[in-house]
Image (tube, rainbow, N blue to C red; front, side, top):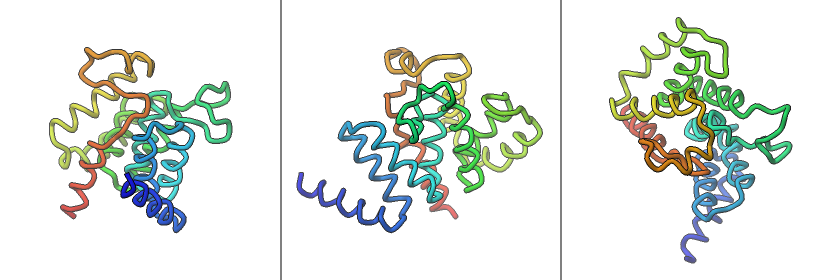
Length: 188
């Protein structure tokens, strides 16, 4: 237990130095400890703002699922705030960062016009650069996220639907996506 606290303290110190990776890992630590979502997502926002692409992808997916919290109001249920549109913007940032997972999800949003203007030609150009580096299993999982959102399921449906191939906990951890992302960094 003490070792875990030391790890958190080291990550907090690293986060103060604008280290996106440690800010993201800190959000993971707080999520595992069932911390308040405002606290968890605040660290994820910091990491994404410091161009850490797995955090950008996570915020993107949380947005698509309607779970992305507006840090100004500490809620995702505000008439002037659309979490899904913000999620697409984070996926766009992850595309700019070169994250293949975020690029694929952003291209799917562009291809289908999901919370953004439809642009099939641009989506195809993105697919050409990222699909070759994703496995069939990765693509199946990512497509299921988009299908889940397109079919109009709410986050509560996701939480309580145990028969679905992909189930999403309240704070969607993208550990698999981070592992996917790390494979590409090792290959580079």
